Image (tube, rainbow, N blue to C red; front, side, top):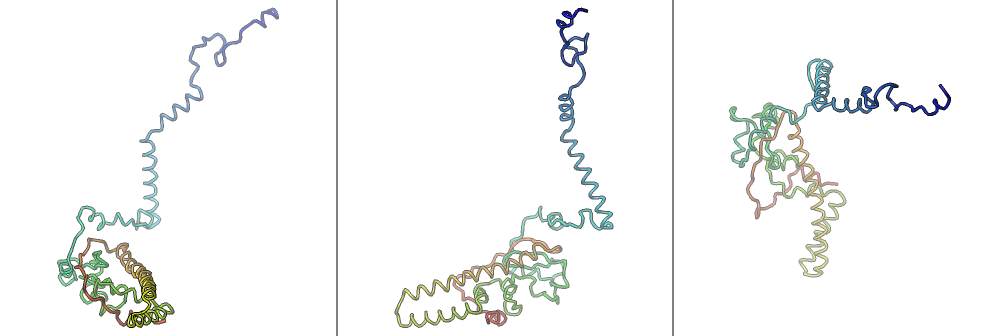
Length: 260
């Protein structure tokens, strides 16, 4: 074959063997492989993998915990039987009189404890909240005040007004008492009204700040019952309006907390 013939000879198209038609199928390319794999991984396949992983986790948890748990010891509150039952029940709305029936005296009724309006079923601990129990006096009532003050004898009521005073202590209490004395003196003489208003605003601000401590204290106990493994929320108790009624004085235990 001459040198000119070799130079003028056309090369076959890339990927097409000599003697084959340019349009002849040469098998899947790299892009075809990727597209095939993408189409092959479906949502069903993903769910199968996740289900398998979950089952393996359950099996391992069962063996590692000696058959005590399939969730590695974690107990989701939402999955507890009592909470699941309550999903299909309307929350109770009780009056104080109705709530008093759930003190454990009637064995046919559950035992309820209320904290700041929230009612919890504590029937799982009759030795604690039932008749004769260590905290049986909390059952069948909302004793929010006693939860904060610690006066289990005198403060078995939901009326928490005035409890902020127990959180004004030490040097702040001493200053507060001095300002109260000054207010009384100025009001009796009728002089310096602007000073009286100023002092009253300062004392009101202290009580608002102290009231936040009351709210934190009662919130602690609400969360104790709400997050307890054996107790569960069942509804609320509606109390009568206290407008116009006198504010309770602090009990002896609560007054003691005011000392420096």
